[in-house]
Amino acid sequence: MKKLVSVFAFLFLAFTFTVQAQKKVVLAESFDESDGTPSGVYDSWDIKSDGGYVYIVYLNDGKKITKPLSLWVDKKDENGDYVAFSTLEFEIDKKHTFATYDYLLEEDGDYYFQVVDENENVLADTYAKVNYIEGVKPTKNDDTEVSDEKEGDDDDEDEIDTYYYEDSKVEFAYKVSSTGIAENPQEEFLFIRGGNKIQILFDNGKEIKTSSVTFSIYGGKDYSEEIETFDVDVDPTWGWFKVEQLFLTKGKYVVDIYSEDDIFMNSGYIEIK
Image 1 (tube, rainbow, N blue to C red):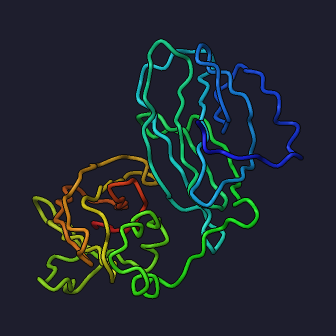
Image 2: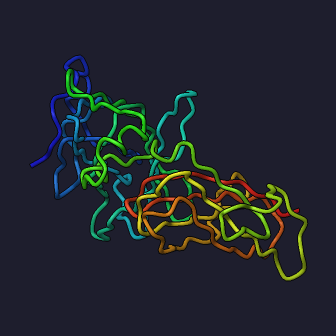
Image 3: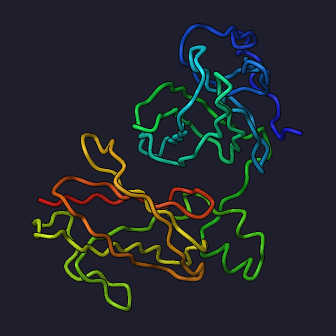
């Protein structure tokens, strides 16, 4: 059963949805399994303290979907900017002209959803606002206070989200010491014949609380070209870790880092000149 609760009543215009001849993505309570027609479509949702599920429904203009599709989710930060929140993959059925993702809305806030093809072209996008129902918003204490009060409490893992890593940093250097110090960290490096072996340092200042991390490296115009994606095993009790990456060509790159639960941890930008 879906954990989703009631939505704002004033969005009555969204009660009825007709499939139109265009590519479109919506958030919905349910959908028709034969043709993907969504129902209960809204752009504002109320959730309980432990979140609520919605269907992300993508309609492909009546054409069968034969190639991979990704779901990019951005969330507005305290500065009013949309920043990467999670990147997910649709399960594709080549017999269908639609794709769906059963998505867990875990936090309140403003979200931006994009459906992206294998070449990272945005096919459809939509915005949504998420609110906690009155009286159930979780209390977020200072991280140190939570650690002191709930030491050894297994429920701590349930509280991990992007904000847990908000004070982390990503640095680039030719060498990172055994104590997690980047020697002469830079954002720009002169190209070396054969490529630049750069060590990437992620420092959270406290336990990272994930047993593996995913590195996604993008380059090209507007960072739209995926260069490489790989996973690294780590220890959840570590406060920092490093990996070495070989950059073979000149250019500007962004490195996105995600936890094993697809939680965005941080990004770093580097240029090989």
